[in-house]
Amino acid sequence: MHRGFEAGRLFGIRIRIDWSWLIVFTLITWSLGSSFSEMHPGWSPATSWVVAVVAAVLFFGSVLAHELAHSLFARSRGVPVRVITLFLFGGVSNIERDPDTPRSEFIMAILGPLTSFVIGGLLLLLASMIVRTSPGSIGDPVAFVQSLGPVTTALIWLGSVNIFLAVFNMVPGFPLDGGRVLRSILWAATGNLVRATRYASFIGQGVAWLLILMGIAMVFGVQVPFFGSGFGGLWLAFIGWFLHNAATRSYQQIVVRDILEGVMVGRMAIADAPTVAGDASVEALVHEHIMRTDDHAFPVMSDGRFVGLVTLGDVRSIDRDEWHATSVTDIMTPLAELETVSTTTDAATALMKLVAKDVRQLPVVDGGRLVGLLRRRDLMRWLQFHSDRGLHEGMGRPRT
Image 1 (cartoon, helix red, strand yellow):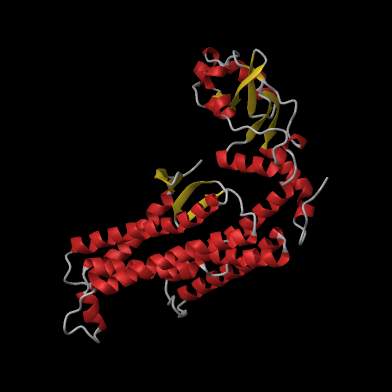
Image 2 (cartoon, helix red, strand yellow):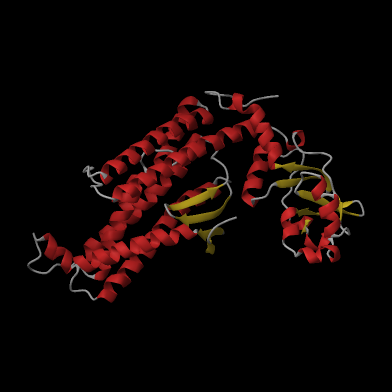
């Protein structure tokens, strides 16, 4: 279940806002509003808060531009990108697979920070062109800041924060952009994506632990260069914790892909999946199928043809009192709306479809005919069987 809401589309890519984004948006706006009020005592409260809101919105616009740079390059190389999500830690592009070459990985990774750096530089240049200082402000930083107007103040803040965003993302902590640049270099050097991901992930975890320790030290009063001290360290430690989890998860994902790549769906799909007649009642479905097996999804057949899929979730969508008067066809997902695979589909591709659609199973269809059902647990069982080989250092793809 996706949290949040869709905000629109850009270049055919869905833009999703996670609910956690509202938290950080509120915090940034509150912080800016308070800071602007202190820096510009001559501004009215309304001016300070309007500038804060506008600056926060434009900041996330620049984060979106950063992610679009990644996404548009990925699409130019034939890699599907369906959604960009803005969330607590900024933004993330749902790039469905890794680039095919180290060069493409390097370019795709570097484009994000480069975009942020260019945006930041242009905004600071624009601010320098329009800034106007009072006669007594030269050499007096406080007077200089107070002399800045709302537009110039917002431009300077936005330019600076974009430069910081570019620099921070180039930290070699996988899966930050800098970590992906590092992985592309290691990939080119070793010729092995899994090994390169493993090394980059270990370095990413090391950077994450450094951020966590720095954050804890700040909370206990240690003055950390550039970051300072105080309870702001909790935020730094939280970022480190998130980065550590992301680095670990990214390595696991690449190992899983390597294990499944080249394995055909037909080798692990259930060929004799239990089916149900479309004209059967939901009550019959529950008592004669769901209660007698551990399956949660059943292909629906009508006159020998595969017409849809019914799941336990579909049953839960209607009241129990309506079971006897409702047919399976009434609640099923029709074939035209289903994501399907064939027996020759790569298992790694099938797993991506399962994750993208957030479903537990995919019908296996060849020539319009149902030949089986691929379930998540079938893939998990295969991964468990091969994981001891797949997680080995510098592994090659397992063959059976």
